[in-house]
Length: 134
Image 1 (cartoon, rainbow, N blue to C red):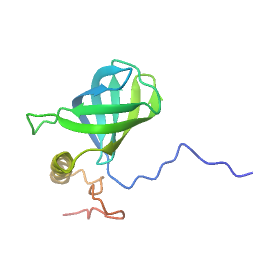
Image 2: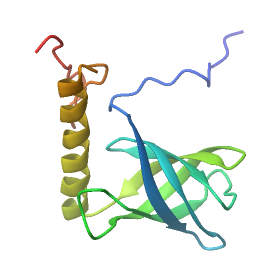
Image 3: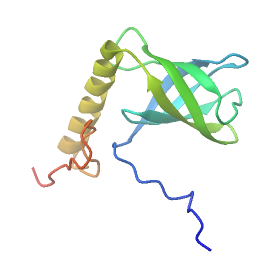
């Protein structure tokens, strides 16, 4: 019998370790927290209010380069471990997507110049790779 390994997930997009404040709102839950890692398609967060798997949320991320929060209109909680959880971004408008890309570009550039070249570019095209040693 062949079983699916749920612990291994192949990721197409780079994740960046961050520490950004966030707020979230669902039909039955409202909370605040800290984004621990961020990618173009989702994030991992630690919150003050528990959420449940599959809960739809609206998310606001406080980004360091912007006065206005980044608004993710529709996201879904994919996993929960205590007060820590993973969110998949399902819908945000193009302006917000561009802003998120800009922040991720800044994070990638800071890694590259600090000698930490462990992340691949966060591109919409699978298979992109960061060339190390630049």
